[in-house]
Length: 65
Ligand SMILES: [Zn+2]
Image (cartoon, rainbow, N blue to C red; front, side, top):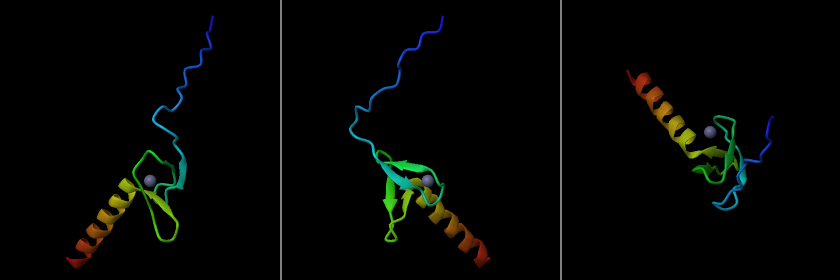
């Protein structure tokens, strides 16, 4: 017999809000993650932004060669 037990936990770390969709990976950002808001009001994960910056830098470096 299947037991349907409610196992979902309530967030005890405070209220987690959706910030918006990440402009890089298109996934929802929640407020307990590191994120950035651009001047254009676009939101992005901090890690995605970092990665994008690194990618751009790599591109520039490759162009130089
Ligand atoms: Zn992201």
